Structures are given as C-alpha cells and as structure tokens.
Length: 157
Image (tube, rainbow, N blue to C red; front, side, top):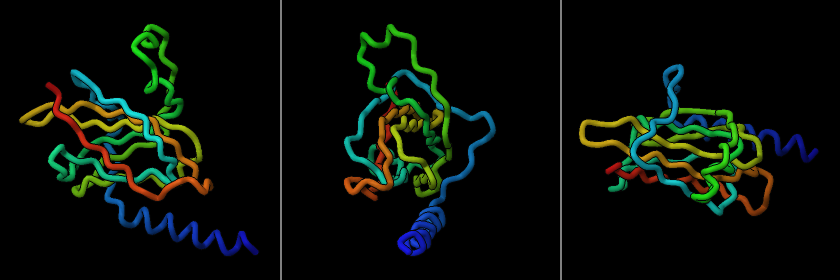
C-alpha cells in the first residue's frame, strides 16, 4: 500500500519539476567550453535532484549556459600533485542548456556522486571560466535537500 501512495507523489514531483524547467537540448556534439581558467568546488549538501540556476556575477540569470552531468567526479577533487596522474575516464550522463531564466533541471538522476560542469561560450565582452562541482544525489536520504544549486559564473581574465 505504501508503494501505491508514494508512486503518484513521486510522479507528480517529477512532472512539476520538468514542467517549470526551461532547459533546452544543446546542439549535437556540443560539450564543455574551456577557457583560461576553471572554478572547482565540492558541495557538502546531498541533493534529492539536480536543479538550479546559473547566474552572472551580478545575480542576473545566464541563459544559454551548458550544464552537463558526468560520472566519476574524482577528477574535481584532485590536488595539484594529483594532476600528474592519468585522469579518470568519465561518461556524460545528461546535458541541457539553461533557458532565458538561467534554470536547469535533470529528472530521474540515480543516487550517486557526480561532476556537474557548467560552461558558456565566449560573448562579445568576455570569456567565462567553466565551473566543475562535485555533487551527491540521494533522493531517499533523510539528510538530502530539495534546494536548488546556484552557480555563479566568473569572467576569465
């Protein structure tokens, strides 16, 4: 009986999340835009799902940012000395581009540890440092949060 009650609630939450998301499919073959630098971070929160907003440094939403999810996020946590080792081969799990409101969302991501990459092609004024974040997803954990991720993009100098 518990399953019958929880399933409609789960499906409703997935429907509501995807209905409000303005994420768009990127062009075939589109992948991370690298620039002179990058920002790497580890998020200590455990998320029920991966959704959020990409913003300019002034807090305004950044449309057209590429948001990717990769498996095996250990590369994000490597120290400078660890860069001498061969990188761990990763596979892209999901991808989208932020809509006009800077939002992204991924429904149905299995529990696990992931690398979230956010990047944007250069604009007339500047290039953007890509962001690499180590994130954990566990939809069943009582310690996980429904909070959205807020990613602030920095100008590459």
